[in-house]
Image (cartoon, rainbow, N blue to C red; front, side):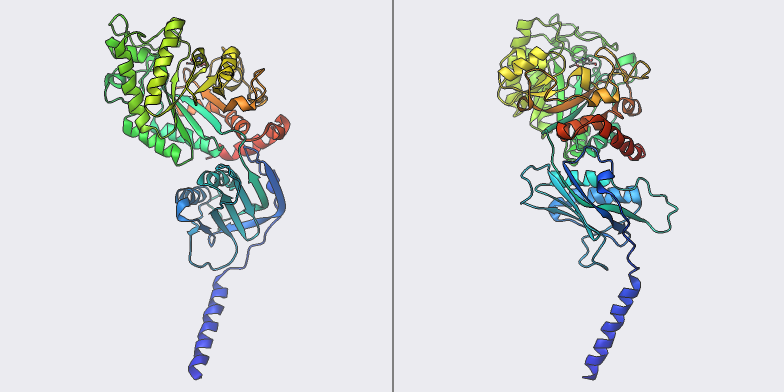
Length: 505
Ligand code: IFG
């Protein structure tokens, strides 16, 4: 009996110790979940006007299938706030102040949909698939304090309570980077991908070859990079991705639920290849490298079998490294190729792309021929081509140059950019809709929106950021948020608040 009493005293002692060790609960302060400046604007936000406290005793819970997402969030919270959350502890010192990621079969069927439930005790991100969890995390990231001051004695931050239920409008929410006119290092491409991930963009279209540079190693044709990758617009140093580099870029994008669409532009925009191998030219002579900014002067030799043997190898090697279902063959501005030769070429190439298990994407000129089922036409400047796509049942990626070309100047004072399609100030970039922009083309005809960043006038990421921000978030919102929830006056306020945080990351 006496022993039992001592056991009881011991338990009482340790329980007392515990309560002594756990600091008092920090007060919840009123916060407004609907005033956080989240971009893209979520579908539904309900604010409960209080807040959840996260501090050094907080834990992060996630299951094995959400390991990548969980570790991504853990690292992001550490990087931004300095807090190291405990991961999946068997027990916690307290029942409140924790974050949970959980897969729920019964949430919306859309893999990219998510719910954020935030109470004074717990923040729960739930979704039917890891992609949705990842997007819930992006929304949470935009509510983290930016760069907690290191002088803080105790690291603590608050998240407003309430509920967010969210899902994307379009399946294809893309941005293109032209790494041919100017080369961008793997590190710069990764940072570029981070910008896309922060705004729930899910397609990264990388323009790997053009007149001025071939940027991807092809083992069957090493001269494409040795010679074709040497320089860039302006004659400066070029560069290229080894296949290991390309795989690294793919993995980085995949971990952020971004599909990579590689583009090898053809039959035009091919001078870098034509300067690398004589057999690609009809006259059997290599062209000179080109470092200017003209377009439409080059063409592969259309009726040589060696051209298609070459393309079979090039497309085959890149397709084997690319998990996404699309391969972009360009097809734009083939002014040095007769129309009937162009049509013959596109029909042959689309079968090569299919033979390597990919669906073909091309700029909207490809609609001159009947395209295989599942192909996509990327509308950039000719409405008739979009209508031809619709007539043959080919879905459209909306990238109208006048609205979506990120390489257009903001206005006459812009330090970088071109102006052939017109100036695109921040409001112009936002004030249009992919599903109403072209007469006769509706939501049912398009897969989504994509903003191309051509790099004739920008030679590194810092310069590219000048064109990317502040217009990128608007394109991301256009791809994610229904038009009924988009209006410039409301968006402009959110943008200003949002960018204050992200320009510091
Ligand atoms: N048009 C060309 C691009 C680039 C662009 C610059 C397309 C599809 C003008 N083709 O846009 O290669 O030069 O704004």
